[in-house]
Image (cartoon, rainbow, N blue to C red; front, top):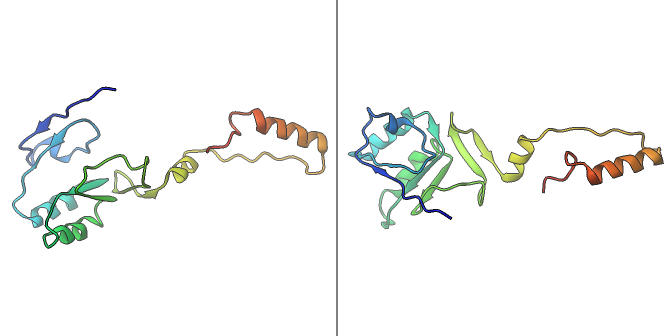
Amino acid sequence: GSLITPPIVYPVTKDMRLFHEEQFGPVLPVAVFEDLAEVDGALRKSWNGQQAAIFTNDPAGEAATCVDMLATVVGRINVNVQCSRGPDSFPFAGRRSSAMGTMSIAEALRGFSIETVLAYPAKSAPTKAVVDAAEATSAFLAPLV
């Protein structure tokens, strides 16, 4: 595989487009805040809410305050670990315009699938044989998992 070292952009200020963009690429924007109230204000003005990360080694510190502040704004709070893809290991959760609610892998497959009813007369053995053969070989009727 390839390793891409993400560029660190510092300092990112509130008047920069990068401050307001949802990050999906290999870039690490770094913004400086004076206090938690300023962070809270920026989060509440944001349109997106996928994930946030808190890094601390102080159990008596502000972690609980940060969790309380983030819980209604983002769908996933990471403690001492970077943000990562959720669907691979956890249900995917998000808030605001970037995502709504929580979705597991199975729910995602159902949500993006097309429900179809295959109807046939229950007492018709020849038709049942046709349906069984179709289910066994049809890509559309194949199980999702």
